[in-house]
Amino acid sequence: MNEPRFDWRLDEVRELFELPLFELLYRAHGVHRANFPHHQVQVSTLLSVKTGACPEDCAYCPQSVRHDTKLPVDPLLEVEDVVARARLARDSGATRFCMGAAWRNPKPKQLAVVAEMVRRVRELGLETCATLGMLTAEQAATLRAAGLDFYNHNLDTSEAFYPEIITTRTYADRLETLQHVRDAGLKVCCGGILGMGETREDRVALLHTLATLPAHPESVPINQLVRVPGTPLEGAEPLDPFEFVRTIGVARVLMPGSHLRLSAGRTEMSAELQAMAFFAGANSIFYGEKLLTTPNPDADGDMALLQRLGLVPEPGRTDSRVDATPG
Ligand code: SAM
Ligand code: DTB
Ligand code: SF4
Image (tube, rainbow, N blue to C red; front, side, top):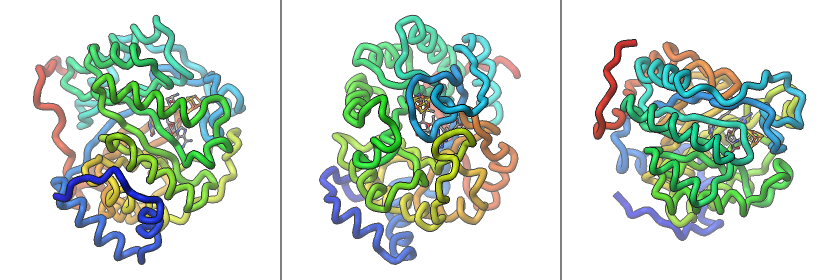
């Protein structure tokens, strides 16, 4: 295994994107095999614990209060309801449970409730992940103390394209939250969205920023834009599927030890495209019929797809007591 590099230059990233596709796939798959049991795919389930009416203006997001997407608003769920959903996810084969909230940042009382959700979900033997918006250093430490394993906070796109997509918080704000998360000892889940009308150079810059952070994020979600009616990006031009695969391949070469998640957008991808993405180095998926507010492929179909490809779910935590309560 080669040592991961944190000093990638922009022109090196650009050159990787410019390789003939099969040359890139050959390299990326080699890096993948050298760093992972290459037939394993990590399986995470998402739950929106607070839905809609978000004050931020992210142009892609159905949950922004600024876009008329007819999305029903749901206040913060009860802890017991979240635990019940987590148990179902575990029993259907997920090993990580990710709780998302449509907040700019959590208020103290809200954070206390989410910390309790984390404690309870962890007791089920699941890995825990949360995505709640911006965090202070203290809030990150509180979540860590509650047993949170991962925090998801995406850069979404390049610094140059970012102001076209979000105006209510800056790229620097995002980098600061990522710093707090890492300093608290949480694992970082950070990636972006493709297909928002960005150029290849924006994709180059996004991956370059991710690969030159002080440490590579342990988990890198690569989302394909879900074009939700009522959002400013509803009519975005679809991305060339080979450019999507190429982006995964470049990410695999740049960040050899990171899990790359084939995240939102799989309902619009063929089995063949997903297979190609796994070959290029993707080794994690969101599993279960819903992402946060939009559909995801059904769970049985996904397990069947993994089986057809000879892939197996990655084992989850082995360190903890597991609540064996039936159903
Ligand atoms: N509100 C929190 C925040 O933005 O940090 C957490 C939840 S937010 C929905 C998490 C991520 O979901 C966003 O950063 C974005 O990358 C992704 N996302 C949201 N809407 C999407 C869409 N329509 N298509 C693809 N990804 C999307
Ligand atoms: C991430 O990168 N993708 C997930 C997760 N992190 C929280 C969210 C995808 C959301 C897709 C749109 C929706 O379902 O609302
Ligand atoms: Fe709010 Fe997050 Fe959606 Fe942006 S991505 S509008 S912050 S829920």
